[in-house]
Each structure stands twice: as structure tokens, then as C-alpha cells.
Length: 261
Image: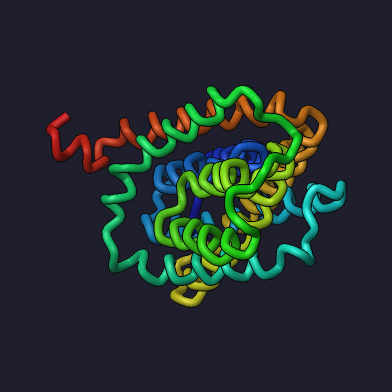
């Protein structure tokens, strides 16, 4: 779908900028962009594919910004990034044949649990803590699993990466945010490759939105590096709760359908 009005195009660019800003700090950009694309008239599969294209710019922009300041070693994280991309590619391939109802049903509850974890854990800051999972097992098990989820459904993947890095890898919030953006970029790339192959991406608006995402992510990542846990923690909690409310209030949410709400 390429014949968008100027007003719709500007609204999509604004949504992409805001998504890049929020996603570079706390994740959740997909829940801003996907509804915007659907409201603009894109089919669900076009919205998913185009979201992956523009999301590459935001996650890539944030990754570069964090790497330049030494918060993530890109070379050392190549194996994990490859596993995230492979997991997302497999998820994207299954996205058209596996119903997403199960994810829509449980995701709001998972996001609220993540929000509570970050809100109530008092000793959370920039200092790394003891890891509960070795780097090898973390990369082999957790990274491709979240990547797979990102490919098959997507919303909240950044929050899951953040939770895993903090709770299992023992990372401080800023370090976790930086590494999350790298893996987000990798899983976006894996999903994008599949959607591009099947030809469901709207390239023109996707690239325009990608430029807006890039700018938003630059602003957000710099703010996160300047303020650290003071901004990351509250924005992460707010984002998780907002995503949960958004998903739970969707008339198509299976829980609402099952219980006739």
C-alpha cells in the first residue's frame, strides 16, 4: 500500500519517531507502530513486514549509539545476535500458520509481571550483579527463544530481553538496555528477511518511517545514557503497563472473546 495521503504519512512518521524514542529506552515500539499502520489501511501481514523494516533503523540506531559509548561490545555479541536472528526468522516463517491467540491472551499478564518485577526490586541500578545463567547457556537458550517470539508475534520482545538480561545475566539497567537493542536489531533483521522474501513489505513508507525511527532512537538512547536507571526503570514500568492495557483492551483479545467482555 503506497498511496497514502500527506496527513497519514505525517502521522505514521510521528508514530515512528515516538516508537524509536520509547523503544531505545524501554522497548515496546511495535505497539505504537503496528496499530498506526493498521489504522492507515495496511493488512496485518503488510503491517508486520513494514514494521520490521522501519524497526531495523530504530534498533540499529540505538545499538550504534550505545556501542560508541562502550555499553556493548558488538564483536563479542555476534554469536548471540546470530541466534536471535535465526530464532526470529523461524518465528516469522511460522507466523502465517500458527495462530497468535495464545500470545495475545497471556502477554498482558506477562507484561504486568515484568512491570512489577522492575517496580518492586529495590536494588536495581547500573551495577552488575551475580549472573544466574552462564553466558553460553543464556545465548543458547534465552536469546533464540525471545527472538522466535519476536518473529512470530513481536510486541514486548524488548521487555523480555530486558528482564532476561537483568534477572538471569545479572546486567545493570543501562547495560541491559544496550544489549537488548542489539538483539532487537538482530531479531528484526531475521524477521525482515523472511517478510521481504515473501513480498509483504511496503518499501516506500517503511523507509520513510525508518528515518524517523532512527532519529527517535538517537534522542532516546542519548537520554538513557545521560540519566541511566533514573529514566530507564520508570519508563520500562510505564511501557509494560501501557502495553498490557493496550493488548487487554483490544476487542480481538482472546480473553475478552472467551469471557464475553
